[in-house]
Image (cartoon, rainbow, N blue to C red; front, side, top):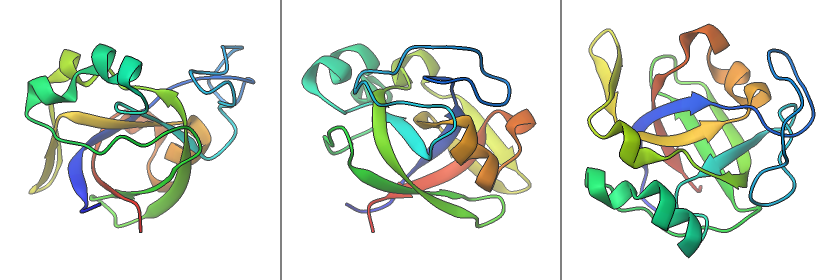
Length: 136
């Protein structure tokens, strides 16, 4: 998979961690806010039909629960490996959404990281950052 660029955000799931209360364990049944995991918009056909990244012009490979992606924060170069544990983000709700740091920008939300993972490469208070996602 070639690197996909866009924006990243964070979400709460599973056992409470940091700013998260108790939540469900996501579409895969394994999601925990304190683990290095992420939600992927094309984790299954049912997921894709909800998130519809194609409506924003994004083509992404279907990858199922447990698949490892590497997300790089394009603002600071920090990178983390996480596994798919949920469906999301609902990309079609944010078509054209843009986040920048200086001259580096990302458009369209392509990945949601758990708070534990996001906090390793960005401040939770930033909420949204330009990123790239790949599988190597």
